[in-house]
Amino acid sequence: MTNSALIRPAWTPATIALMVIGFMVFWPLGFAMLAYIIWGDRLEGFKRDANRATDSFFRGCHRASWKASRRGGYSTGNVAFDDWREKELERLDEERRKLDEMRSEFDEYVRELRRAKDQEEFDRFMNERRNRRTPTVPENGSENGEPA
Image 1 (cartoon, rainbow, N blue to C red):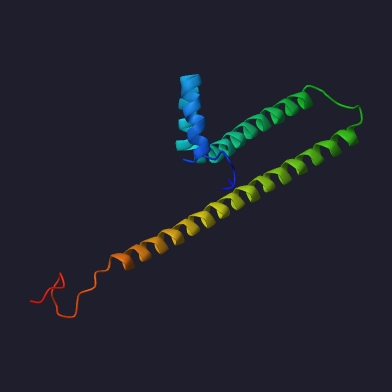
Image 2 (cartoon, helix red, strand yellow):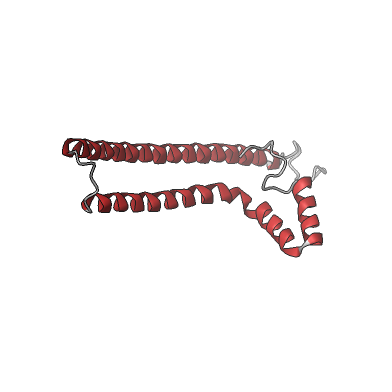
């Protein structure tokens, strides 16, 4: 998601205003906006997973119906053409499987890059925090700076 979007799942003035207006107009709209603010960053992954699940389900249905129609005697009347068509469709299915595997590998790669970036930012934050909180002991040796 881009950080330049006006309505993004974060506590921005626009989202807070929409939430308040939603509660004033119809309370479920306010709750919907609140849920979007809190859990909206997870919607992209949820949508991607739901699309993959439905794609694979319907792809299986399509293959099953194609095979059933093939077994049921659906034919053009030309055996050579039917054989060629079947081989081409199998080749295309194999290409689709390869593309799906490549997409999965790329998604994993991007997830790993994001995780590494998040880890780097967290480590930098912790180092800066640690450096800020490191107490300096005065030269005279007392904790509060007063003479002993």
